[in-house]
Amino acid sequence: EAGVTQFPSHSVIEKGQTVTLRCDPISGHDNLYWYRRVMGKEIKFLLHFVKESKQDESGMPNNRFLAERTGGTYSTLKVQPAELEDSGVYFCASSLRAGPGTGELFFGEGSRLTVL
Amino acid sequence: AQSVTQPDIHITVSEGASLELRCNYSYGATPYLFWYVQSPGQGLQLLLKYFSGDTLVQGIKGFEAEFKRSQSSFNLRKPSVHWSDAAEYFCAVVNFGNEKLTFGTGTRLTIIP
Image (tube, rainbow over all chains, first blue to last red):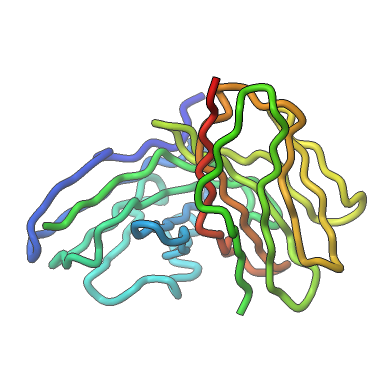
């Protein structure tokens, strides 16, 4: 069974450009999460989808970030326009049941974003 | 707000030696506690978790962790490390009913021959 896959693995863009990160969760997992790790800091929650609906987007840093999950399958996270402080590793995770308190989260390898 | 502290940024251990990675949390009630590992080129993998009951929990790859309420700690241990244990380890917490994991800053483990 395929795990959580993320694309691209690494993206280098210039400040002001747009980047779109994609996450394919494990098939059948309704819950999808985005987390981010800025260099040297902790991994922080961004948002949580249940199917195609945003359950919790309290961690989204600002309106330059847009997450979608059309049809409740894969998800995209767009950063437009990118700023230097957006550099980091973006992790996607999925779970069968909601939340790490009730179900195990399966993480992807992460997409590293470098903004120059 | 809940928080997780991993005081050791980088630890170097000889292969075959014992290992203890420290984790302290700050939270009013008893949280759910986790240890994740990220090996090079891989995603975060759950090593073990504590929800309630026995305070010593066993995980995969020979790891164990002990929940100590009085010290607000959840340290990860392994009696004898292998070169394949070289990775970054993250302690995390979530409170019941909250779907969000709060992570520590991670501890990078290097294994020397």
